Amino acid sequence: MVLDVVCALIIDKQGKVLAARRSKSMDLPGKWEFPGGKVEPFERAEESVIREIKEELDIVIEISKAGPAHLHHYEKKTIRLIPFICKQLSGTISLKEHESFGWFTTEQLRTLVWAEADIPILNDYINSLS
Image (tube, rainbow, N blue to C red; front, side, top):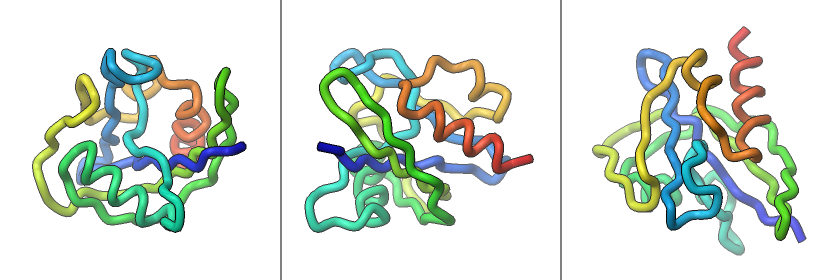
């Protein structure tokens, strides 16, 4: 069974991208990811990413465009990670699950230790800039 999961690449006015570091209570603790979460039954991916970011970061986002989804096989599950390029509309980031977050340039993003499923999403994003 494949689990649909969404993630948000939230871009600020300077072109920096938000990444969040997974806390010790999460799977893959200490790894960086684009925040998001599971798509609920009968929910569209677009609705899911907006809901998940409100729940996890307490901010309101707007989707600019969708990116290509990627399958990733973890030991106990397979996920289809569906990325969305977004911008923050309102709110102040308040972490509910993650250990920390930051706004990163493309060069800085390359230096982070990523959750494996997010790596092809990061590469697609970087490649889309050139």
